[in-house]
Length: 251
Length: 365
Image (cartoon, rainbow over all chains, first blue to last red; front, side, top):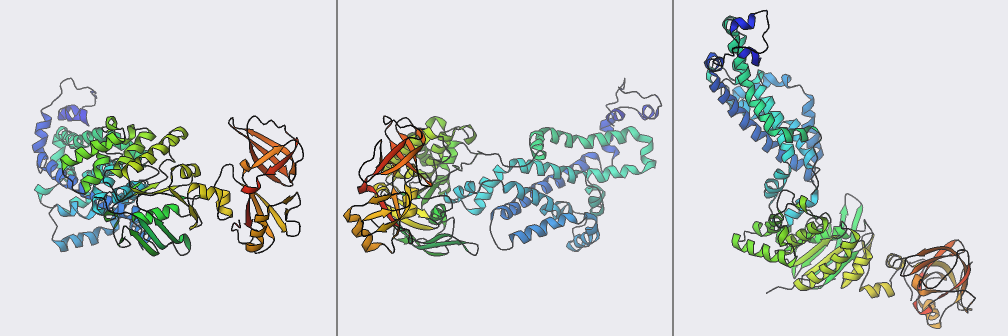
């Protein structure tokens, strides 16, 4: 994909495959920005707004619910937890039409809200957060309580910082999911200028417009992937920790 | 000025779930500035009592007073108590300095004052050089000091310690025992200390409350518990190696304690006690290993037995003697040589034997 993005259209179609282009066409990239509708910068901005705010809210929501489910004893705790994780058994697509109607009722079609808000309390993230927070010793929480810390203070000053590995892993997974999501944003965003990168890229399926400019298509896709690659490199350490078992490390 | 900070428990009961009684109708008065140890095997309810006083558990019934204030409905933050946990429970993401400062920060103490207090506390605990480390870089003993610092910085009314030495190695534990006691005397804080280690309890406490199955079995100083245990449990729990117990019957006309393996004449004073208090003639004779002397030949009022195992400890030797189907442990000076399988006679110090009613399990004299 990257190689194609620095070739000319003719070089791409040529039967002699040139692995390392002798004459890379870097000018494809600036051209790619305006090739997309909306322009790539606008699409990237849309995606960033939606993904960043959704991920932050999701981390806040799932860690808060996860903390309560993990560490508070109250009647119905278990029932609520089971109810939440049972949501994971329902395929997302079955809720698509009701969800669309709900968003329409809220008047949220063609806004960022449907992409940011509904996923904030994802069953999967709550489940992972709960399982992580349950491994934080109660003593650590009780010690804060006896020091005069409020319950919300304990969440903010103790639980959140101690949950960093879990937050990083869950945050990253959800970041990638949200960034790559296509169907839901496509349904919600009809205004051209609101489109996220993925929706904009999906527009490239228009063969008549794309075929004459395959090199620009490749350049667009390459550029759209860069944010995810950068993010993965930055958070790699936490990500590996996240995949290899999330438990609280002692002391 | 410090206010009086005695702690009173009135009919304290804590039931977990439907019928797990962790604390069973406990009455206890811990005096101002006293160092009281709650001693008992695991699961006896001692930690639950501590957590009730701290406010981390809500009693099922009964009252808790700190000073003159009934604190049942006072939240844990407003009780003015601090606690040290067995696991130290330091916050791993904060430096030692921030761990110690946290209680003051939560109570909105001005920054400059916090800094001063942290420095003062660190110096008291000899840890100023550790303040900028995170808990992961501290050894067990150092982490313990930081945890202590966090607990004392606010100058609490009551200081609660939940097995604070259990996670330290043996040598450090003996050292910290003394330091903790010194620290408590210096600060003059009412202290409640939970442990299952009788050596800690005996060496550190003003008074000990021995607990078993949610009840306080006996309350007293170390020597009271050691010399005059109130019942079979306390007699067996305090002392290492533990007290030897022998089932026997009291024969009034002979004035003797008799079993299949022996007959032992007992002093008049004990006989009168038994006649007065025993519910039946079924008794348990208890004798501490150090109150047994071993002789190579038969002595008046001695019991013949055979050497079963010899356990030399250096400063003393524990000799296991076979008596019927029982093993009796005796402590002898290392200079006293015996051989395996040797026929010996043991003599009990009659002023120091314990007689326990088999039915009620209460000590008689």
